[in-house]
Image 1 (tube, rainbow, N blue to C red):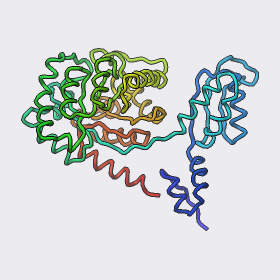
Image 2 (image 1 turned 90 degrees about the horizontal axis):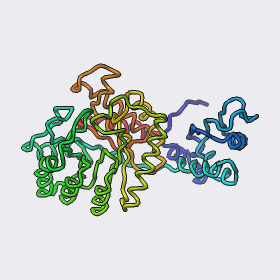
Image 3 (image 1 turned 90 degrees about the vertical axis):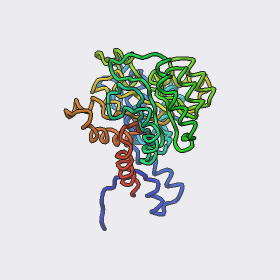
Image 4 (image 1 turned 30 degrees about the vertical axis):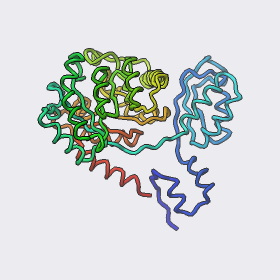
Amino acid sequence: MNIYKLNLEKVGDFLKNLDCDIGGVKIMSKKTKIHTLFIKNLHVGAANILKQDALSIGADLAVPEGVVVAKEKYVDALLIASSKHLEILSKKELAQPFGLKELAKNLKKFIQKESYETKIMGILNLNIDSFFDKSRTKESEVLDKILSQIDDGANIIDIGAVSSRPGSIYTGEDEELKRVKNTADLIYKHKLYEKVDFSIDSYSPKTIDYVLNCGFKIVNDITGLQNDEVCKIIAKYDAKAVIMHMQNDPTNMQNNPKYDDLIIEIDSFFEERVKKAENFGIKDLILDVGIGFGKNLEHNLLLLKNLEHFKHFGYELLIGASRKSMINMISPSSIENRLSGTLAIHLESLRNGASIIRCHDVKEHFQAIKVFEAINSIN
């Protein structure tokens, strides 16, 4: 007899290969994923009930000392449970007091696991002040660059005409449309939208309306659908929207950004904007936590580490940290020498729940992701 430890990404497939009963595969798969859920401001009565219910099924709830004697009215706690445990607790707590009914509904969100195909979103900048000068594209180079990114493996090409780098000032709608118009016309003329999905990196109603009429399918809005007019236009074309989180705006977003609770505040932002999108009739959404947009290094690292939290919304998650300054803060390097750091961040993001990677270096990302997926496909 031999025994060895496995690191399984697809437990269900492995169990099927063992020729386990189909019903057993479903039950046992849920036992292999361990969730650690941080619960803030939990009523002490709820904490005591949940602790006992968790223990009774083999899970646990870590609570502060003094909970049994109700030393504090509200406490923070850590629920440690498998997917199967969460499924049981999400039903069991529905009949309990002290806010546990609401908690039960929230637990259910973390059981559901949507799976999305990995996509590469290539960056194409039409402005002359992008922070990475090699991404700046002259009008005469646009067609070749688009075809090159398609050949290199891009699923989406994100086109921007104004910079959103820290400290940048918006040029205005007319100037933005002037910069992007000929490129949009070229895409429409050559039917390039049949080869790849095009995204517009904009929050200008005028620009968005024009490019969606030229075959663009995605609106990458760094303001997170703040403008109602943008919402109306996206709904009119039945386009997909990227809701990105940003604290303040590009002119001041990096002036000492602060959060009382980073994850909860961004979660609340997404909840509000998702509801807004749905109210306007926008069906397809992508969520982007906004790495480097009103966040310091610690904020960025925490978001990357806990990215899986945001999967409970059920939408694709996008990460774009390509060559950003956070890499320089960790390992001093020029913008031109940050590809390795970029790949490290983006592969870790895929592991933690992202499915769309926005990057400058499409070819290198395509190879890295193929290798990453090959490793994770082995059982």
